Length: 131
Image (cartoon, rainbow, N blue to C red):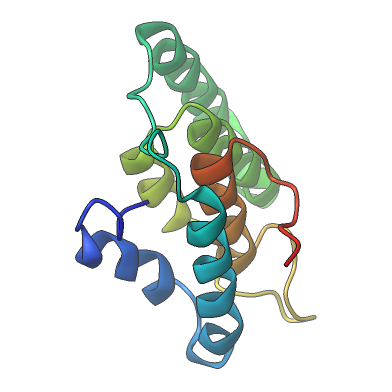
């Protein structure tokens, strides 16, 4: 979406959030997402005041979540922000996600959440995009 709007720096930020060893996996996924989203109405509309209020409320709940349980709460909040098309909130929340777990890539990790958020913003769904 950012690439289509000539915002290459913002598009690169998604890729930069991923560890170096995973970028070769991320870039093709992003390209598939962008190809899937290529249509005249692909640019998302800004979030509504109701969506912003709901995100603010969800963020308040997140801040009250014990630190040991914040990974799951952060992941949910990233998805909610993406669904509301609140890109700056997504980027801010991705900074709080762990780069990767000690057991490998998990659904709360920054790499996975970045792809999820990009899919949601670009296509409206978090479903895996098939070739």
